[in-house]
Image 1: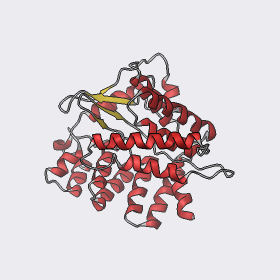
Image 2: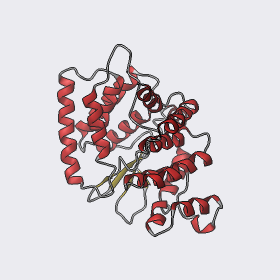
Image 3: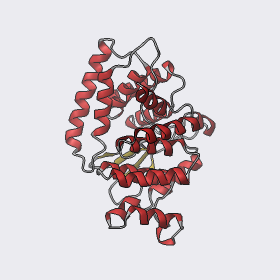
Image 4: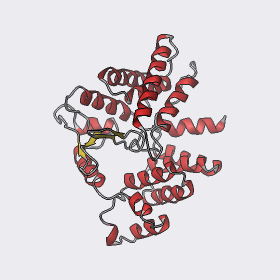
Length: 303
């Protein structure tokens, strides 16, 4: 499953923000009495595509974001937003807005998506709430938002009010516990595997060296999330076959991770390996029956 790290990183002149997800693609199975809005699906895909290229011109993307938000408002006004997936897609478009109106809309729309489909992941709702609080200059409460003040500065978790939400509630919302968030920050501040690849080390060599616990790689983030990020970075530069090696390796290293199998399935489908992709998504759904993304993809493959 695509981590919201290459897709939700916002580089600005002052700081960069990162919503780190453990799971979180924006999909759901619509109620039988309603049909998901195809235009909203397209708006969501365009929103994500703008954030998956290597070199992003944020001045251009910001203009597209504004246009997408205006279109979503028009669809809301015309009562064309009906299903849980519709509301989730609309929320994700507003999630990338830069003001409190947009962040507030993201919260209300994602909350409606969860109300309509209680089986869907609540992580995106937690992230929307945290980002809205951040936009308003208040501490976050779940712990989904991370920032760095400059390219050479370390990642930090954005200010957190730990009295508002318990770790038990965080788990319900699919958010890491406070201790896990601390570990995440440590991993985020390690060297990235993509740097090794860009320096000329092949993917197979990188993975083999990590597996053998080569001490030269101890300073690199080869956690499950780190490897997943590496895979999507490779996909973003068009090196899909190389990415497949990383995602497959991640499933073997973390055989109980539904997210690893979800990402593996996505890469397989991108390569046209439909049968293998279907099997990977089914494995992901078996590991986590609440993975609405896997259910949605499997449903589309069956059509």
